[in-house]
Image 1: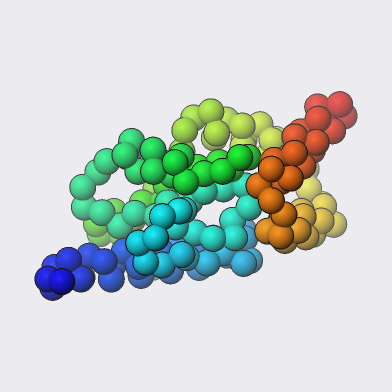
Image 2: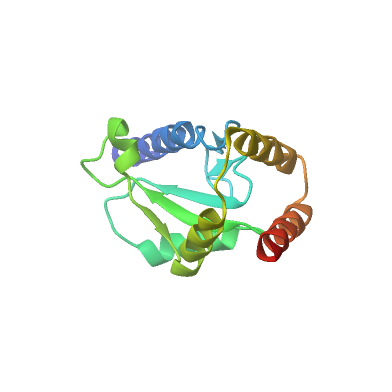
Length: 152
């Protein structure tokens, strides 16, 4: 392995670790997959398939197609991109790439909820339950929640 290739690989792995650390505020069990095995870059992010890129080239559609390929039933695929000049300390400023239909759906869902601390706690435990649940069961649960919100 050449030095430039190893440096790029190491930067990519470090970027995944930093990205996983950032997402732990939302998903306390989030972790990076590491290595080059197939699948989303982050694990334990129920409802989301996250690809993390630390690339100089800009190929958002290729990256998004990769996130979509690795997303499962009921998962929203998106890409978190670390551009050149945006170090680890600026992780909150790294852009994310998501299809507009998914972003609109997330905003619509969020606008229907005014969460109390109690509700937020329930959602946290629901996420933890979802980590131990199949993707199909989780998708069915999301449909049920959407139906209840629509009926309210």
